[in-house]
Amino acid sequence: MTPRTVLPCLSALAALVAALALTVAGAGALPLPAWYVLDTALFAVAVLLLREVPDRQVVPLVLAGSVAVAAVGLLAPPRTSDDAYRYVWDGRVQAAGISPYAHTPDDPALARLRDPGLFPVGDGCTGWDERRTSAGDCTRINRPAVHTIYPPVAQVWFLAVHPLGGGVRGVQVGGAVLAVATTGLLLAVGRERRRAALLGWFPGVTVWAVNDAHVDTLGALLTVAGLGCAARGRPVRGGLLLGGAVATKLLPALALTGALSGLSLRRPTRDDLLLVGSAVGAFALAYLPYVLASGTSVLGYLPGYLKEEGYEQGHLDRFGLLRLVLPDGLAPWGAALVLGAVVVRVLRRGDRHRPWAGALLVTGSALLLVAPAYPWYGLLVVALVALDGRWEWLAVPAAGQALYLTGGQDAQRIAYGAALCVVLLVPLLRQRRAGRVAVAVGGGN
Image (cartoon, rainbow, N blue to C red):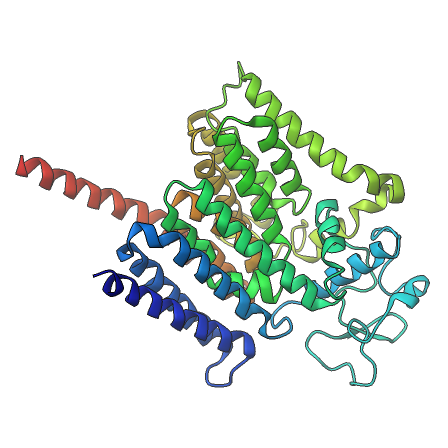
């Protein structure tokens, strides 16, 4: 009986891994968007079939699948993002005893640290991930004329993976380790082990976390650990981990709200104060050595990045859904108002025993409001979905992926508009179904 219940899920998982391998390898049978659609369909089938797997076999199957899904991301250099090359550079600069915030990559003072992996020579500089420096040299590092944008815990991670060859493969291996570790942590922290597959088998793990090696995976790992500690009544540990997550990628700051679910603004508890104090302290201490070395340069390219990505008044490229109903000048304020209302709801009515529920609501809502074009921002949402179980929020990173492939204001509104519909309609259908079940059970009695 057991083989018949495991085999369908195992077959779907094997098909998913094979499709992901072909996606990463750039197989010509299908265009990249078609591969993504196929990967998503196989992922959904595999997760559904996991329900039929006996409980005792769920953990080893989820972990084995997580290892396979992560491993295939190592089959090729980054395909859709060149951020990993900046990670390699920042790690190399630190290994040489230099602050990553002190110089831009095209600074002649760091010319001795260049190698053909990051500064190719003689290939015409025509690759999708290549561009010229201000001096005319070819490099794979994006924005070579600006300082790094990545916060200090991310920088520590780049230094930690530098010994793994000092090239892009090292950060990819690091991404695979983080992805599998996050799956293992979800199995330990989550209350329903099958949900861990929502991250461990998620196609975005192969592409965003491993092949492109985005550091968002580290932020997601620390956030899951921090929320797990908060749920178990360990506010200091939870705060330290959440502060570290924010000092990896600023987005996890939104998840901190979930850890304060049910907060009484009039009488915050001792645990609330310890959690907030620990998070703020961890964030400040992470920055301290870099501030001492580089001063205000630790801000890096953050102000320029916000302007470049369309968050500045006068040339907004974000807030696509809000701009359908509000003038451009009011869209950021409208987003802040809506997000503030969501935060207040979580703080007042959230369940502190399930902090990931509030964290998911706030983080997912923020991404819907801002509508970013980078799908890997959604890795944190995927991790929170794997804790909470509301799979409809996976539509948010899917919208980011669709926008990343197509681009344009119309695509932004269609993709995130569809995601909003999924997020709003699925809970209504779930409640309706639960009501029908309750009526049927009551009628049977």
